[in-house]
Length: 193
Image 1 (cartoon, rainbow, N blue to C red):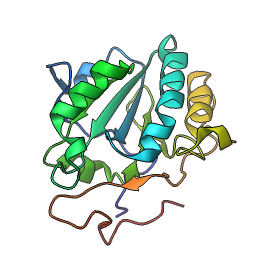
Image 2 (image 1 turned 30 degrees about the horizontal axis):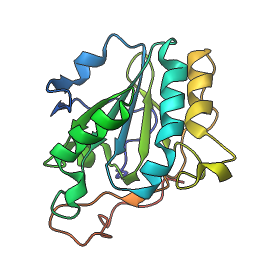
Image 3 (image 1 turned 180 degrees about the vertical axis):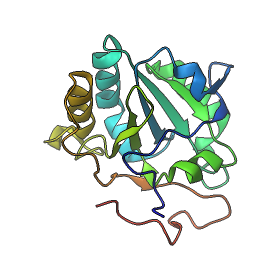
Image 4 (image 1 turned 90 degrees about the horizontal axis):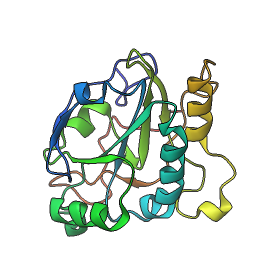
């Protein structure tokens, strides 16, 4: 079995605390026809470099019933910047158009097979995965961006077309796993394509 959730598989439920003081599960997203779940964090230069493009994409598709859920699974013991109080402060400062959830025990990152920050998962109306991988091809420096894979997938999905490229390799820092070296990845984790 692949480490990362594959196109055609169903979204995995979660129950995680949010920076807005609430707790969210998959069922709380049912008001959206489509759903983007992405693994992100506070400190990663690939996240920071592409957050405004992700914001623009989220805002573009909000009126097409696409919801965005950000999940931080990084160990706060590897990077203190990734702890929950800093998540709250980051959302207060930037007011991103998504809920920002904390996966402290990393169970959801394991369940989804999140490889990097950022790593995107796009689900259709049935909550079946139709795209996973990178948001853009140059997340650390979006001035060099040539392709916004997330935008392409969402445009196709929301206009009733099949997603032409369902799988790309996420580009970013690896998930910071608890008790491991900052650059460690599970041995069964590998490139998606």
